[in-house]
Length: 382
Image (tube, rainbow, N blue to C red; front, side, top):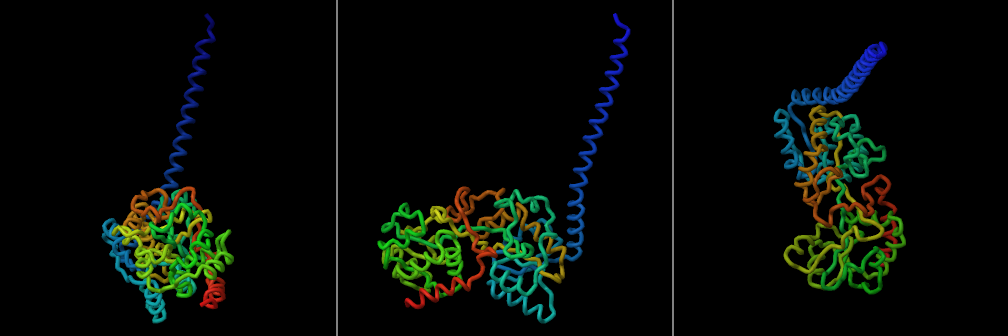
């Protein structure tokens, strides 16, 4: 027997022990590093909550549904009282601007439509940047959001964060007169077969119709050529009476409704058993328009409760907050992709393989060029 065996054995044990020590140290170091990363956001979040509770209040200005949406926030953070100034976007924008002109800085957080946010408040430099205020890891993590990014409405990509991207249906039909499977492109609406059989929202009426006009104008494969033919050749019957569109469609007076969104009451009519339905936007090869609708947020500058505003914003963008928003605001489809979508109506739900264009994007916000075409084609025709 060799006397070297015990020595080799001892050297082996020593080497093994050294390896184990190094391994444990490496694991501990990695764990410590992870804890430091986690504690960094946690320390920041705890500091914000502590300051927010001292402020004791957050003033939320925006669309009418948000008082119900923030009930979950109020339960979770009872020491931060949520107060609300809610109403139509135009009124809220005027309210904030009037208060600021009078030297009264009362608003903390804006939640509502992109038009008021961008065209009124952002242009008046009312907002602070949002990115530095995003703290919760589940909010910051863009893999949880549609197209793996945060979507901003403003050109700078800093001030107006959109958290809703609902599919917009603008074309309806009488189920007894139209086979929707025959429509695979928006160009199918300029088939001479449908001339004189389409009722439409007056394209010169402004308001809600501008979204679909921008979509049709800016979408590749459609553009000005499509709008010229659709508005100029199809003998559309225009109206500004939203309910009249559904009545005429259901009675069979017209086969197709155009340029009119959900406000015409087509959903309710369908539930009542009337022969009407929407063309599913995802079935058109050119894609479908997405709208942020009232799902936009902005942090008000010179806010009286800046920490409470950050706490409310992070909660709203959290999984819990977005489930509440999507459930309460009928027809919305949160841009978070890690939450259930069963509350989203089928025709409003984003499909994985469908193509979509945001009609609230900075690239398509310019309405002047679209209105010039409408004036040229539509008003001259009338």
